[in-house]
Length: 244
Image (tube, rainbow, N blue to C red; front, top):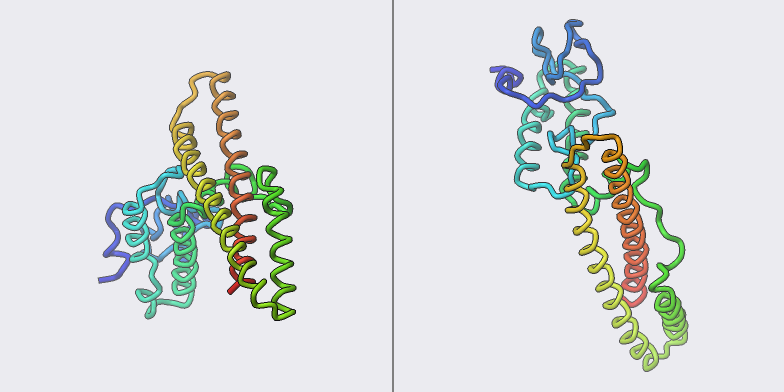
């Protein structure tokens, strides 16, 4: 039995790349197989990852649901089922599968999910910091001095001083890693706040403005947290690489 026919039951309606079937020119009405010629249809490149996997634009998602939707669509688009099809169908299956895989990987990881939502809602995932967060400014400067001293001790083969500095840098790393965990805890709290706001329906124009302001405030804090987290992660990675 043809793979398209096997999956011709109830399907998630997805945005197609075009409104007419590329093969028979019949109208395409949101299904990923043409109802007339049963040819697989290309998904729109504008399709966002939440819609691609049939999920609302929320940050707390059920991973089991995500996986179930992913595997269901994977069976429809997997290139293995198109090995004996035309070159056009093989290309479409590859491109659809690539989009689906990227969507799944992005939404499965909570940090990538938050960055992607920011990109959708605010136009950019995050602004990477080039200077330390204000509340860690002095600690980061002291750490950078310790790193330079450690590198100098390495060059001078000063083993005693090297071990003392390594111990100090280990403590510094643990402090930064704890700070990262605190940032992530706050980030996950904002997930719940976002989902609550996203689930509301504004009945009046004034309520709608307040709702938008609330969302914007959440997005702003999320961007700041993600930027700070990335900055700290880069510092920690530098620490690990230097002292390894």
